[in-house]
Image (cartoon, rainbow, N blue to C red; front, side, top):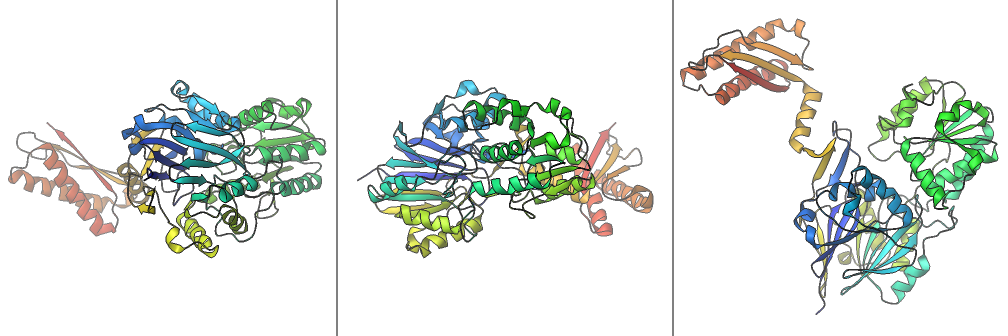
Length: 554
């Protein structure tokens, strides 16, 4: 009887981001990615969202290491937070580790880990985990699919991938090796990227974007061109640079992450920009408009990003106006549409022309569409399948596609965050709500924001706040001065004096009744004041602002 294998999903199933899974063999844990998610609009004041690490903290001594499939922050950005309380080595390609290292160094935690570089086709033993790293194409170079050989057969994780037959760097998804594993040992369990499972057809090659970018440069020979993309999208940066250089332009990078990633990729030989065609952003002002190409961060409209500051006229280095062309070489991540549209609107208000993916094919997805997913399933031919990486609807569509490709419905399991699958001699079984899987919010520092705090912020944003200040005699509970009513975001005070008089009277009456019953302690007085104000406010205005009683005792 072979030992069972368990896969616990801590994030990334039912959402875009927070990708993290714990694979368990012989009481040891191998993390497969450890990513963050950017906040939704209703997560007021939140900077980042992390997986709930409770399970990993509880079993920290069992963690053998972490495999990071590629260099996007939704797959490695949470490492700097997990390493605060644990210590383990991290495995990935050289570029992936260089990108992950930045946050870890900034957090002062680099001494809590060892960064171990692995290469295309390498097979490495990590404790009881026999891992093989298989090249896949994606929007960041040097991503991997990971084949893990276990007592229950091969577990294959696709990583984020597409089947690009003509990638910028020539590094294709290695379907041959995947097919060899499938035809030889077979794939017992397949975990597959679901992001574009609703999109029919095949994703366009990344090289197709280069031709469109070249035409944009050719159409605007006299204007300054500012191209915006993810700092991790080295292939896109290469194509922007190629188009700029071919049109006689010199490049400057804007944004710390863009500057850092361009330098790293050039040092590794993954990005080719001649020294004489690259200047510091501080010197970009010396270039005439027709000579300049700025490659900037901020493609998601992040409020403090380089592009958002440009749109607001607050960027230290670049003042956008008439004669500028801004190329948005990206799609908005779900949830970021409003921020992106706001930035585009701001750029137009300043007189710039904006070229985005709704007007020209200046972006290509890094995720496989349905045609490519069919190819992958045909090649891998798994015994069991769990769709991963995507919103719930994406995973449902991927599950249906697997059935269309000939899999039995009972061998396709749709899991969500917190679920676990157990692979044993009897098959693959889904255990729901196996571990805590809620959101861990980061607001400045990790762990200081709870669901309750977010709920309070939403109330303040939507309904406002009413503060009632009362002074009472500590011995008798008598109200010794007129209650004071202070409001923010609820009602315009000068227009509500009659209502304020009613609130003062209601508070005084409630506290007098409380004192008559002997309710003289501080908390009882606060409770009665809050109830009196809340009831009257709801009755008169049909709104429910936050009520904050302040009791001063004399």
